Length: 500
Ligand SMILES: Cc1cc2nc3c(=O)[nH]c(=O)nc-3n(C[C@H](O)[C@H](O)[C@H](O)COP(=O)(O)OP(=O)(O)OC[C@H]3O[C@@H](n4cnc5c(N)ncnc54)[C@H](O)[C@@H]3O)c2cc1C
Image (tube, rainbow, N blue to C red; front, side, top):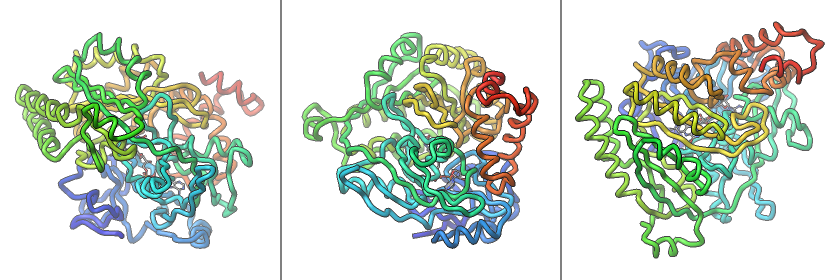
């Protein structure tokens, strides 16, 4: 099913989703392995922040024997899924092991509602298979092009205060470790490693298979309304998040508007249609093609400094979305994966906060937007239920996420600014987004189990076979902070307290 565009040799197999030059934007000039002169022969991630020479570096194993052979014969390896992470997670000084050819769905147990699959299966393929049994993937981000393993490895989340991130639905992993041991990791068999394994950005070896708890397939009735970006919005935020199953808030700072998108399960499409919902038989995207064109025009006008014209265009987009998405009904995955098509590539940075801090976060963001013209058209906010994975951004508390986006040329400065504004509140950053501003000491404070994670990582992979230079530099910085404290005789819990 592989295909390639004229510019890139790319292994993304959905024709709608081929990376085309006009769909993509180089977002990070600090790209790994980037040699612009030979770019046309490079394989790029979705955001074009990582470019690799496919022939030299990328391997596509199809069996566990091939994986073990690759581990034995290479000093440096990074796994890759669908390459949708913006952060340089798949960049490797050795080889990249793409798991995309290990994509079989091995079986669905309808009694336990569990599905067993190879790790490189695409989430949309899982959704399609599970739907045959009236089942669904436990949570979904705004796209479903990712591999299941790639998504759990970065802590991919959806937008519901009563649904945790995707890794919380995994019941078992088959892992091939850096010393080529195959182990089955479940909460019962290996509780500590299970908690560390996802999200872990692939530092423990190669996940080859997974068992995932599915959930009943829902039909969702969705609505979108717009309100002003003002204090009343901040007051109503928590209630809207708590009283709807799924919710996504999009702020349009330059026109001081906010949309609340909500979706709730219903017993049948017909009931929703009787209430006036438009029936969507397939995916319902936040942006249709015409709206995408208008948003691109908005960005061009902003570049030219023609803000009044730009804001008129943005208001038209909003009107169009409100008319189209005001009230509709469709199948769970078709409704939740709302950025699936017509995306405009951009850099992003996504912050995660304790949900209880929502008023403080929104108030800070609002004052920032009053004092500065934000260089992109929107900010996006969602919420996620807590879980107990060591490195999960939602570890130990329900969370709200806020995602900032920007074009490449202004992203670094803007994200740095935003980071400074929000730092006093205390955030954890999405592992797939915006890691270039990472401050080791701050991350240690925000992830209380980081020490335990680093210790386990060093035990399982002492030579760093599965770590790239960027990752290694963060872990070293964190390791140094730990050493700077009271030395090895100090208990783990004490070290975490000290760092905090
Ligand atoms: C348009 C868009 C929308 C998005 N929406 C959301 C969203 O709504 N919510 C959200 O949380 N995120 C979202 N993301 C981020 C996305 O879910 C993550 O970047 C995810 O990790 C991508 O999965 P992938 O298969 O592309 O993995 P890759 O990006 O290829 O890899 C991710 C990590 O997984 C590791 N890995 C992959 N496979 C294995 C394996 N078999 N064994 C060990 N390690 C492995 C890699 O080494 C890497 O560290 C979005 C991204 C894009 C581009």
